[in-house]
Image (tube, rainbow, N blue to C red; front, side, top):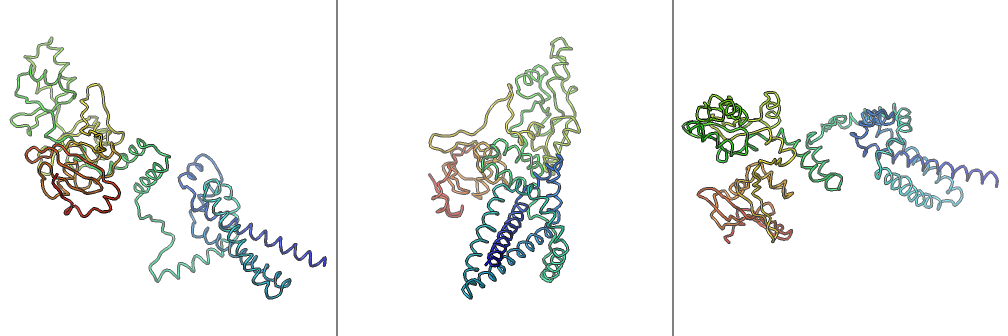
Length: 441
């Protein structure tokens, strides 16, 4: 009897130890897989040796996973076999059933669900805690894991599958953008911070033509005017830099800086009649409309100027871009005491929004937290024209992208004002393609 009791206690001890080891291997695999690489890198840079171990193990991910699976299966199978032999000796053939049912419950609950749930709830902490034991296990089972890894490579090679290449389908910017969006949805990042990070990531994807002030909205000065009129125009303008044109508004001959004009006016004793305004103008800097915002930002910093005119492929002036325009893509609208605040977005009591046609889609998305596409058009009027495949008449309405767009006012071939109403979820599901969604109201 004493020997029997000893055998039972020994068997129970083996089963408990095996379950604990199984839980360790299962939890460690989950923790290391879910751990934040950025967090581990930051901790390693701060001098945490455990984070350095985690990063080294994640660098050989296939070998790590192989070692964890080998360790888990050895102890789990061993525990099941040991339990079956003991229960068979005690209960005969029915002991196999008891062992199968008992070990299935124990393994699923204590060696799978429980450790993985704990690990996934705090993966970074779990990875750091288990870093040294995992490193030891990987070192011990490394040769066997390496052999299995090579075998798997050979088996997958005929199918064109290559392991060890950690190339993501998404670019680094897309992954970062997705992380920021996820953290915003979970409450970890405020909307303003999300928009700022998103704007920074968009600099390479946007061109200066996407953010420029169109030539129809440019404030420019006729250089042939009397100098007194030019001084009054500069003083009444909210801008410090004004393009000068001669003959036609498209013929820009220079850029007049208000500070240079005021210095010359002071030197002349306040007499504007004798000023040669064009001689005070700075040389005009022309940039292609296809220049990316990132490249233009670097060019502004290198050239130490904040103003450039945008031209198309034929050299015709399309508009102007400033350093402030680019910075506003990152931080949002920058207003000072001289700015004329005209947002062009007016929220209505019924939940709809009246929008000027020239409002950029990106600005509207940022203001209303919408997600209207801006790939094919820059302004909201351009989006409506693109989707409608025509210049709609006043009163025409369209449903697309989950919104109802109604043309409130139109001037010649320009849509000047739109009413945008978010559709309900039911209306969106029941909606048909844009071509069939037109109505006149």
